[in-house]
Amino acid sequence: MSEIVNEEDYIVVKPGIDVVASMAEEFKDEMLSAINSTKGAVVIDLQGVEMVDSVGIGVIIASHNTLNQSDRKLKVINVTKDVYGLFTTMRLNRRFTVEGV
Image 1 (cartoon, helix red, strand yellow):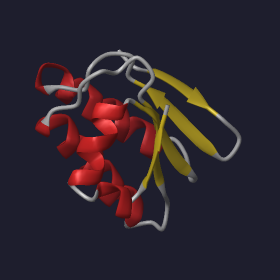
Image 2 (tube, one colour; image 1 turned 60 degrees about the vertical axis):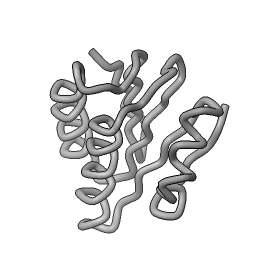
Image 3 (cartoon, helix red, strand yellow; image 1 turned 180 degrees about the vertical axis):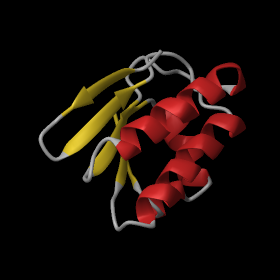
Image 4 (cartoon, one colour; image 1 turned 90 degrees about the vertical axis):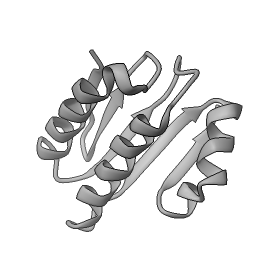
């Protein structure tokens, strides 16, 4: 279960474990809850996350698309070098902010 921190004008979601198929449904529900509980941006803090698979990427992209429909932003922070490489290879860093550790 992700740690969710409400800040003044954004919300932070910290999965704390690898974002992979086995946890994707729960992560998707947590992201939808976070998106619906703020009018601001959503930050995904990947500290402690070593791997993101295609299902996890799909949840992140779907979250970005949902936020984008209401002119809100997604930001992914504390991304390991390997996961950052995945995001840049897929050019996701052009769709939303991705910051390494």
